[in-house]
Length: 270
Image (tube, rainbow, N blue to C red; front, side):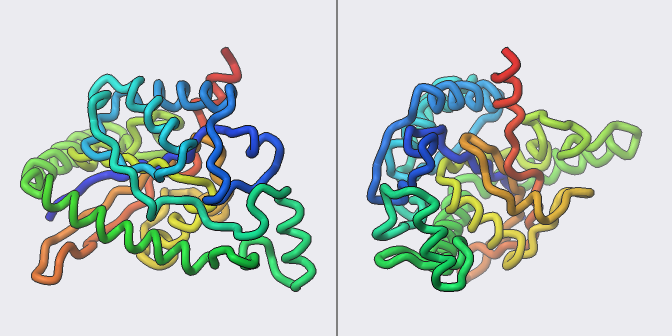
């Protein structure tokens, strides 16, 4: 068995985000000044996490975000980013570059919600989910091949943490830590970072929870798990894999937290 954590981060704000315009894949914009500040904040928030692997959507706003996160890191500033087209935002077809309200109005005219409506030339949510499923296969295979030998060490560490909690220590995995970036890290010695987009991350979380049966954090409403991810919002999952003749098999999956934005609240208070 091999266990690792996956941290998902949405890119920082762009001017299109601020103006309520759709970007998708065809509008490849850079971060706004506010977006850069948000990325610096999330970089500081995640600075103690040693990411062994970093996967990034190959659009400018996500690449910039990942670069700032790595620059702030105490452990992985030299880690190479893998630019992955499978992590791109959902395509909104003819509505890219237009106001979000235009898409909502078109969906309403067809009697559909904005989430379910497929604009001409765009992707369906199912197509985006399929892209994420393909990425998960790539991710699981690479993590197991590169780090699978750390499995015994992972088991020993998890058992050590369990004994400490049994002796009275708190479980540092979610609600007990509030906004602490350490949440879930004790459950795995290996950590991967993915930097992607708001709609994509929302669809990815739905797949992990609804299709793969990721257990949610205690006391957290499902509606919170699926709410819109803010710019530089952070989500974390812990996966346990086993190897088989057909490739990696998911044995267990746990959602530690989703859509966390404590670093932005701290930034606003400064």
